[in-house]
Image (cartoon, rainbow, N blue to C red):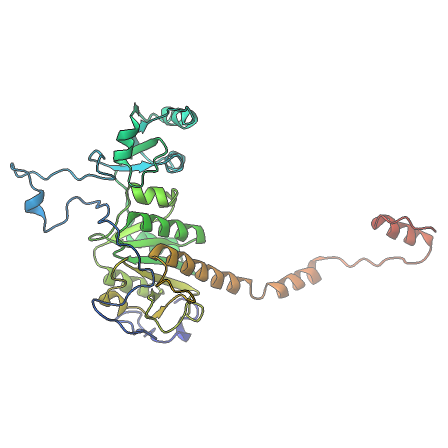
Length: 362
């Protein structure tokens, strides 16, 4: 059981199962509570598993075969995932990510060192015009290079839980975030603060594609990202492993400063347009929002997630530091020898003057 779990309101801690009670939730209008990170509606995102179910007829060829799924921009060849930008490609090489080929436009020669690394790693190099890279790019920031990788290897929820261990841990659960740029930015913030992983749904949500690789600055290669079929079931599993579930929504009563954000937390962030769904919100143990003085309606989901992540880090860091002064004092008392000084005679004054680099007239 997570520490402080028995002191937390709104949760049946006896069995760790069942529907959790929400605390201090605000009004939920329309199709569900509006999440604190509303912003511009993103694209449909990258689907790892091919065409979505329900669109089989429109996706089928005349001979009954499926159409190939395109990754990245409109000019992206089918098959695998495309990552763009120098840093993302360098990160992929560093972690040994399998790369099928690289498209390079090195007009000024500045990519030569990175191209040599790709060649040393056995990656086929293909020279490509800027127009081709522009068509492939999701954000127009390919920096003259893009690499085709093997399909992204998603983790299992059990992998995220195993990485969390038994103590303080943070898991981010994204309720149908649709923009790859937002997904990548959230993964980057999660990795920086030391989160155990990110959980996303398999359907109707952004997956790890070229946009996510780019905005995560390679963080998607260092943090487990689990795809699940049912977010509500994933939340119940996390609760069984000692996680408290907090939802970020602008309709919450409590601010993030007042919410119980320390310890073992699953932080739920909603979609850009609809926020957290009612089904998921009903399974949150508490909700919170960011305090606001300005007139803009709210931060977008990636910005809000960053603030929430750092509040968790602040809480657990403060908790870890409690008792540190006493420990330091005890260590000083136990380990540092006390040496009695002979303060008699001129030798003592000379030695003291030398230690402070003072020219004493003795």
